[in-house]
Length: 419
Picture 1 (cartoon, one colour):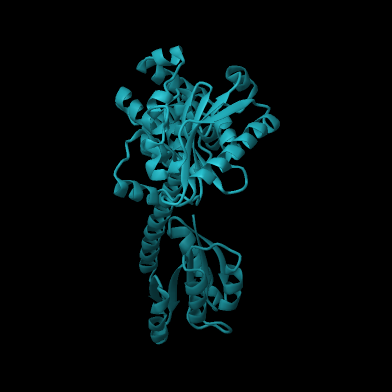
Picture 2 (cartoon, one colour; picture 1 turned 180 degrees about the horizontal axis):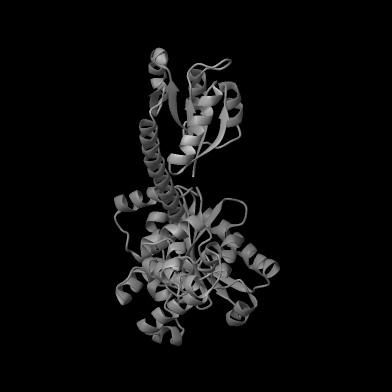
């Protein structure tokens, strides 16, 4: 419901407008009524309001002064002037405040209803746009680290070669270091007794990877770290030494830093690791040519025979099983890809090739199907079901459910549940 306040120095007008809006204007509720703009300004300093319906002439602070305050400090509020014929010039002066509409006393009910119908459409459009913007921002926030990782994978494996293309993509990914003045080195981290330690590390494989990356980054801000690949107990990382102009100095700094990391891993998370560079330190643009031991793909060849022999069908089945078993969690593409030992972006493409369905669409479909089952077979509240299928934003869940089924969760339960 959108919130309305009414401002007029005549009590009978305030009451009649309030009764009409509450009774005939769908989607609106009258929160408060005021007889002077001064009280409204104090109220708006702490309250959220969607529409202000105000007279022009009042005792202490006029409607024009109130509109000026709203225009400057609460620009999202829609304003409607309601006043007499003699005040029309004042109303024209309020045009600079982007007033939504102007009503002349005595007010015609049909006209007032029409104005509020238009306001409702405007507010709904803005609400949907805001939700879409927030969703897009959320997706960008989630995907940016993955795309940053993919940048270095493509650079190392030679997918990216054209300098102009590299620069364009680098700039779009919002790195906090320079493409031309920073140094990169690819390292391999070997984790001792990996299977035993993974059982001990109750947070899971992906969280282990993030913990190790965070240890490497440390708190100095001089080094950044991006995941490249994870093969059994072998974690491959590209380390960025920010704003390093001397390759020899960068190499020495990196050697000292990696020795510290080995010690920190044992002290902080009780893991024994060894780390070795598998490339020379190089400028970012030259990293593909910095491997002494051969191509990156040859160095990172998976030695786990079971993983090598895993069929495409088994890979998809394993990913789907992980999704079903963890449906209540806020699953990420990176986390699921990690379960089948694939790079996230390649996993997304692989999933589409094997199933004919986008991974995101599949995940939503599974969650919606489970939500339908819970709606029909349980007495759980809608927000509880939302959480059980991995959505902690109830409004977002409701939106996706209606897009998929054509009904709200409540409507679906009422229509399909057997009496």
